[in-house]
Length: 423
Ligand code: NI
Image 1 (cartoon, protein in one colour):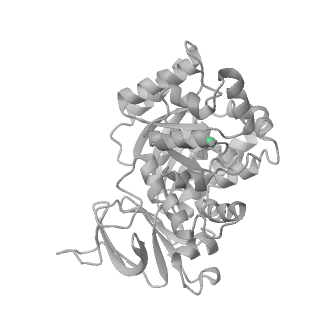
Image 2 (cartoon, helix red, strand yellow):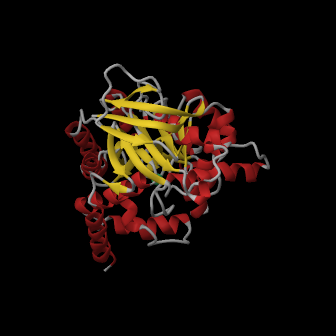
């Protein structure tokens, strides 16, 4: 399939320029120079449109859309242990499939072309990703202790899932120890060994709340970051979500190990966990990516909202209007996300990169006049301006219509799940 996106204002690595984009075999073949014998199967008119690299949601739990607006305005521990975890026990694999598809719809609708996911039932997320055509780096959440049969079973399930789906074009896997407080040190070391053996990335929640810092200090006499480092889980293949409560030593450890951090500004605010020290992380040279976290804690998977918060929040708390500029924010939401997820072939509009792209309608009152398109993305857009989304050279949404997902069916199925689990 060859696609031509004609004369569109495109956010290129060097800045926005009007260019024609030639796509073939899933990749951007050329930016502006027409390849010899290029005959498009499909042409998209770029007039009044903006082309951005698809956004990368580097931390979510897509199946949790079924919990959207179910448990709000609660302290973190009450929210997680009293409300969310008991409900999770009542979810079937099929429930998770429909919930994940709804999450994927929401992400595509708002220009996200790849995401990192952590979940409880295996094989549902890969099915939903495969059926929809989006790109994802997936991981079954692992919790348990050394020698604990349930923990061993979870790890075995995760490894079986990885083997079953190996070689899929749009899917890769990580191992996901849930958090330092739900995996004991022996279990952490076991997961670290498996990850090293299989060359897999590690997806983990770290230093999300003050209570976590206290718990880990009491149990092990160190910070959560030091603990996972001791147990071999802090490497250049680590993707650590949240990292709200880091001290300077934690930040240096991240920088030394080359691990990536995913900041989740809205989830951290909503659960009253605080604001991550993103400026210090960036200053230390850490690769910082952006994630929504789940629809139970955000309560949206629209990365435009988090991009907006990211760029505003750090200006406000640092009294520094230059902090996390629109450009830096967009890089965090694209290139840095790709690096964090090990998706080196996406995140930029450049020849040779995967054609993972979002077309934005600029003919909206909130997007006019177009003085600085990148500032418009960070400060003026809602995400609803996204009208066409391409992943790996395949059009998944066109003029706001899903081409691979039956949206009505998905919403209907998710509502059935809710009716059942909420009684
Ligand atoms: Ni999370």
